[in-house]
Image (cartoon, rainbow, N blue to C red; front, top):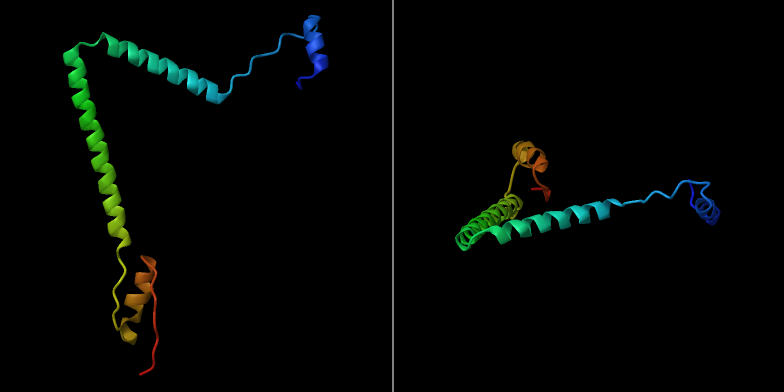
Length: 115
């Protein structure tokens, strides 16, 4: 139902039920994140110094492992893109193999010349 001034008057008179509170998805996410952060803070405050040191070491290992995986992915992607730079002379029988089939994996540039 569209909310208008008329509906507001009817609500004040008790003719219409009170307006429902609308909660947006962003607000729900923010509230859930705040609750999770508060719970995590509470858990951290209850840990001993030794437990906190151990947790810090584990977090360092996790961060380094994530960095390693990310860097390996970057290097693999770079290796896949470095397929260019080779210029070769081919004859008519090699055309299908070198041009048609290779163009499925990477762009191919052909310079045709007459002998």
